[in-house]
Amino acid sequence: MIRMNNVSLRLGQFSLTDFSLEVRGGEYYILLGPSGVGKSVILETIAGFHHVEKGTIEIDGFDVTRLPSELRGLGYVPQSDLLLPHLNVRENILFSAAVRKIPFKDVEEFFNYLIGVLGIDYLLDEKISTLSGGERQKAAIARAMLLKPRILLLDESLSSLDRPIKTKIIKALGDIHRDTGVTFLHVTHDQDEAFILGNVISLMFNGKIEQTSRKNGLYYFPRTMNVAVFTGMDNIFTGFVESVDNENRNVSLRCGRYIFTSKLPEFLTLPEVNRDVYFGIRGEEVMILRQGENIKPLLEHNVINGIISHIIEKTSSHTVFFRDEFDEFALEIELVNLVYRKLNLKTGGSIQVSLKSSSIWISLEDVKKP
Amino acid sequence: MIRGSKLRGNSGTAWWILFFTGLYYSTFVIFAYTKYNPVSIFKILFSGDILKALLLSVLSSSAASFLAMAAAIPAAYALSRGTGRITLILDTIVDIPLVLSPIALGALLLVFFTGGAGQFLKGLGIPVVFTFTGIVIAQFSIVTALAIRLLKSTFDSIDPRYEKIARTLGCTERQTFFKVVLPMARGGIVASVVLVWARCMGEFGATIMLAGAMPGVTETLPVSIYLSFASADVERALAVTGVLLLISLLSLGAIKYFSPGREIL
Image 1: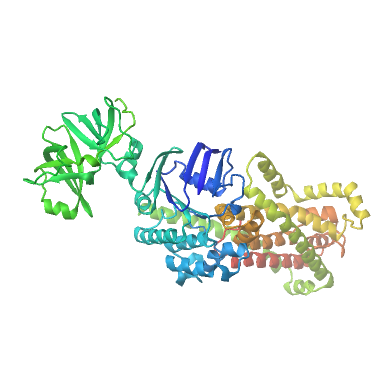
Image 2: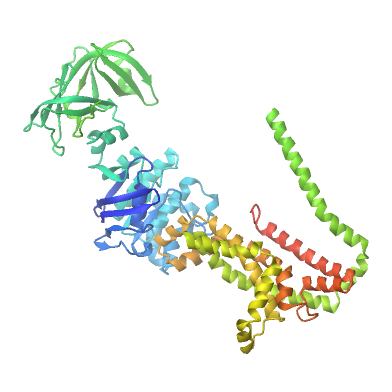
């Protein structure tokens, strides 16, 4: 468990003010956000690299704010591996045991597990200079994990790797986390990495956590515009809350000539009536209705007629640009190639779309007047 | 195409300037050793007093280099990792011997060691002025600054994040220095030892001020050249110069051999 209580510190131009964070024991916690918002500083502060001016840091209930790094019981995997160039791979991985004079036989079983799960058993006698980026990062993970730390901190550890290597390491990290139960705190700007690995994901902007969600709640139900834009919400509109059905959690939103119904999940706060809000829907959640098809009850509220104004072909999907029949409402629709081919869509063709009420997201943030 | 030709042209000009600079230095050596009889110069090399001067230089340079490195390694590390105004002031102070005339530093040393400090050391049975100890102190005073400068650039080239990672792996501050920093600085330390030792071997100004030029007592190789010229024995001076030249060449060769591709200064 990690707890940061109102931590403040200053590092040159950057400052962190009253920052709090709680990571429960055994969680795979992701701190997501664009570059330069202070994610790495938080990890470095937990690791003991920076002097905390105010506030406390606890690891497993112990106040470690003034403890040196070596007494905090943590592992740290930086973006660039920083393996010691004068040692080979085996010596690097066993470095923490050597420093603490722990005999090899005491760590042998876990050492063998780590090199097996990371697939680096063939590299042990290699010099660091001969390794690829992915191999280096795997060795760095094994080195940080060797003594089963209380927490493992990963600082953009996979950011500089190619996708195929990254996918393998993501799988290995998931396995290590599951098998050891160690608390992982992983900083990244990569949403795929975050959503695959994280049990809990926090999105950070300007030294503050903007939203924390379990799994992909951040992706489908962003609470603020920052979160919506960062997670790539394709379709964002402003609307007026006409009514709220507290029992069924249905919200009626007026947007131009349309009234949309949104059904919000239990964990989201319902908006107040008679106010402007931002709302939206992800491109892949927009349904294209086939001619003559019976509309399911969930889809029948938010149906719009219009035409396809443009289609962009991508590697695994197509983006279909939709405009309503009055040229007042536009949507981007994301279709995987298989579905796209089945629908036989063409630019200029008329279609009917439905915005599934349970897929419509509403932000409680105040709408900025233009 | 034009740009490429221009680049080659510039590079060619630079190469010729380098060639003539090399030739400029080589000319002195060639001229000196062709003007005088190389055979008789070679014979002088093995005379007892030159071998004694060589031994004195080797011993004093080795002692001074050892002391200089012992002081410079921690000092350079502190300068490299330090920030703030005091570090900047200390950085400037330790650079002074690099630009100050060695004879001026020697004068300051002489004044210091003929005062209370010298009397105190003499009382302890360690006389400094006009002694072997004086040679070591003079050489140490000159080369420590050089050693700090060389080692600081070595430590600067080591990413401090290695040290932070080492701390998370269980190293104390001291263990981090010995298990991470020193092994990573090994190449730079070896190069610095060689350069510092070679500089000690050639030290003259501060040495002659503090230890004097007493034949057979404080006669290091450079002092020996001075004494030879003072008695108009040019062949002897050239013999000793030859020894120093050889030591310089071997030292530089060793650095280039052991540190391929490294920029030493």
